[in-house]
Amino acid sequence: MNKISKAERLRGDTRPTRLGFLGVGWIGRLRMKSLLETGLVDAVAICDPSAEMAEEARKLAKSAEVVPSCNALLQHGLDGVVIATPSALHAEQAIEALSRGIAVFCQKPLGRSKDEVAAVIAAARAADRLLDVDLSYRHTAGMRRIRDIIRAGELGSVFAADLVFHNAYGPDKGWFYDRSLSGGGCLMDLGVHLADLGLWTLDFPSVTKVEGRLFRQGLPLRKDETEVEDFAVGTIELAMGAVLRLACSWRLHAGCDAVISARFHGTEGGAALRNVNGSFYDFVAERYHGTRSETLCNPPDDWGGRAAVNWARQLAQGHGFDPACEKLFDVAAILDAIFGR
Image 1 (cartoon, rainbow, N blue to C red):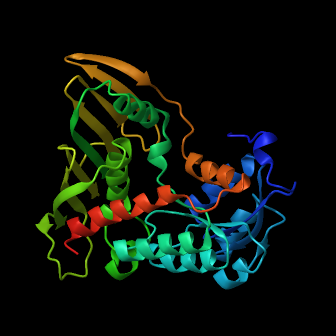
Image 2 (image 1 turned 60 degrees about the horizontal axis):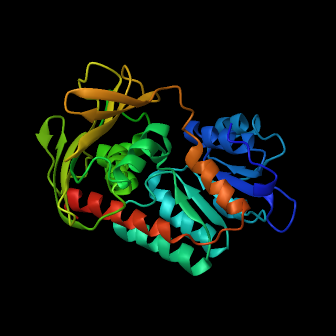
């Protein structure tokens, strides 16, 4: 998958990119597998508080050294680090890596607030190091087609978008439900993808107004509560005149495993990405003309690791700070506004 050509590997020397993996639970190992399959990188060091998870990761990278701490991992002469730890650690660990001249690929969210996100971006800029976040839905084939159609003006003037991510389940780790550790509930976990998709597809227009409401077990969630939301809605007004509406949840009675969609409405047509039969992985992209529907993309589409592979390609080509990462602040600011922070 996503094999890198010899030309892409040129970086002034011939050695593979040296990566450390900080957090190798399920998602961390998936990203490790995608990166190793490129043939571009070496997994040099692994760190996870679970010895079992670390050993599972070593099955993918037998020559990697298992180390006891983030500090020990960052001392291994790394070119980059892949962070898949609990959210409360992301900003601190990313800043520490960047300050040592190590590029960062981080699971979402990059930080629990816009202030944490801003601090990481500032560290990347100061160190002139590559920074990216695993906003993986950008990299589905269907979403790429929809973005290209919209940016080419084929839907006319896009005036609205409806973005939805309902998960019939909830996270299985306790820290997700502690606001101090997670930064928030389903909005932080799932809504970050929706806010990013809306802004990214429309080329990051300025945001003029944000409103939202949070619920927990069917009741409005007060700002002073320490519990996290399991249902969130938000309305984002854009300077271009369009409005984005997002809704996300954990453990919703949805009739299937998941309801995931991004629908864009324009004066000359519409387009949507939607999951198939409740799947978390299979998506169809469609274009709408009145009552007619045209299929743009069908599954299968092996999209999960593309964000990480894209980061690794850039790193192998010697890329430093990418100003595109500054848009991560815009997404974090929307979430903060919905939270009322």
